[in-house]
Image (tube, rainbow, N blue to C red; front, side, top):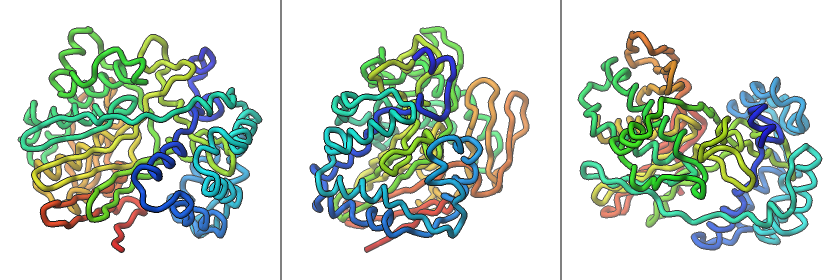
Length: 420
């Protein structure tokens, strides 16, 4: 812990936490899927074993990560990938085959677990087999908030889901929807609400076993500000960044499901084990002691992953994105476009966005082209291309009364909407 607080690393062995994704795969396969795990993993095994042509996003991630990760095992697997490169990872395919034949728990209890620990230890990670064996995912109850004629659902700590609720609540409490969509005053009007919401996040959220406040009592923006005022705290936020997230939404005629997973930064920690890049979710810990999210053994860091669900009458909306630290604002933008400005799902995703990329203190906001940028003291405005650096969103909308759904992929990325 002392070394982490001193070095404040972005990559490397100090940023690795116990991977929980395989546990989640197993839970979903057993509880919610019709097909067995081996059938579900078959396409991924085929891609890893037989290979695929790299797209632009993977190649760009390889290029931009080279200076930071070349000293790690990453270089052996992912260095030098270019658009059109043929990528094969038979080691990852073998790992998936073992999971398909022996079950997901092989990752935490079997020989695969022993191999994982050995490979991580060789790369400097202080981990033991007991860390894997003691890992257990939690089934959680989503946070729920009523606004207007809508019911909102978000994920509880250790995610930043409540930050999304604070921002959407502020939309109504502060009447921020009074500005026309393209009014530059709208960008500036969000400054304080964003600052307050992120300050609450960084001071009060973290591992649910360490969080000292009952988050369910502070779901609205007003309640959050009330607590900040009571504690007499000043704005303080850590920008975690993070861009290596996969989100998909699917509809089977009955259920609309959003699924999100992430290494956090591209290629995670830079370490590779069992053929897979290992995440750097430890970056999500606070960089100073004395907070619910300060680092400690056997503790979950605050992480950025969450999914927004919205219910209005017979319609169900699922909104998710790759956006890291900015995810609550991206969720807000899509919500705002849909329910304040009356856009259809395609237009809501396509419309230009603005994001406070440094939400507290020396504020900096990124504004996509086609939105008029404001000019004001105290806020640094960065104008970027349309389809700029404002996250990648996918949206699913299902009408249960009519039995139909619409799925939308963000044109800013490489995702697609498919029907079978």
